[in-house]
Length: 420
Image (cartoon, rainbow, N blue to C red; front, top):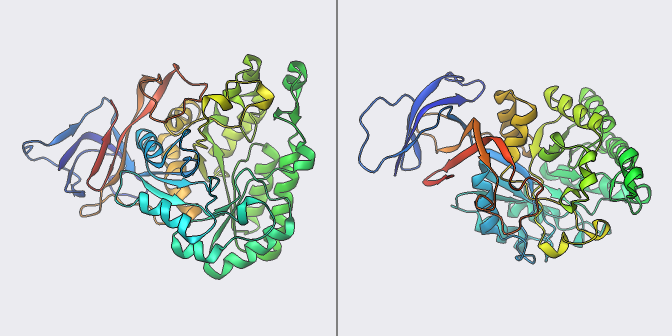
């Protein structure tokens, strides 16, 4: 198979051709020519767009793909299709399925599915057995089977001793421990951000410090133990300030932000649309602006989809009983373009940033290398309607919204996906 990317602007910091427009030839899964000037062979696929860009393939650090156990919400196949439509060639898969990804065999199941597929799946393992916060899972065996990190996801680790043990134990194989900080006793039965909006609407709120005190606790533990710690699900400006200080002290800590938190504030709760019920909760406009500043300042290492599909029964109900989450794999880039504007910085948060978090090398763009590329146009306007949604679930408040900036497709070796 031959593919030509016409007049594509290369976005790859440090590359000799960074910022230049070239015709790129891909043949049999390999980059054949970065300045193609020849005649097109028959059956060559041409990719053309007014403002075509190309970068190394994007990596999403946080997606729930349902399978095994919740196939009515999402499967590995449908989730992979949504990821490819969103421009991702790799996706890190959360362990909170049924059964929980807590041993070698469950890791191997997910990793095997993603082998030689359009999208490579990178499994996370659970930190504790059953994500119940009691006993450490088989971290070393999962690491050897291909787990790229360990998290209990929204089953937030309440026992500080367990986090200490996890950070100490994983140092033996340079493993990554992921914390989703929330202090249950402080959060209580809250559903949304605590503030003026929640009070006015009569919704139970979660205060900022339910997150912040756990960030502080986890950083203290990291300082004591050493190891690699990544914060997932951060939403507070104070949390980012603490993480920035820890980085300056030399602690091996990274963090991410969900893309939808860059564009939403808690005033959207006035619609009582349960698709806005997410964890961490959508904060105030002041918080949103601080999050954008943290991305621009380099405090936030990666921007993620936090893709969390829910079937209609889990969302079409009273707000307080609705499940958390929205689908997000296909809208990450549009959200980033909406508020960041700097395409180089956006690509950094989708490539070198997340690759650094996982300790993986970024794909190179050079002749002879495997083609692992994302193709996108920051100016394309598109309607995220039902025809566009490739997830099984449709729980998103962005349905039927006109978005700007679109992933046009991906090339992953001999696999090609182009959006319509």
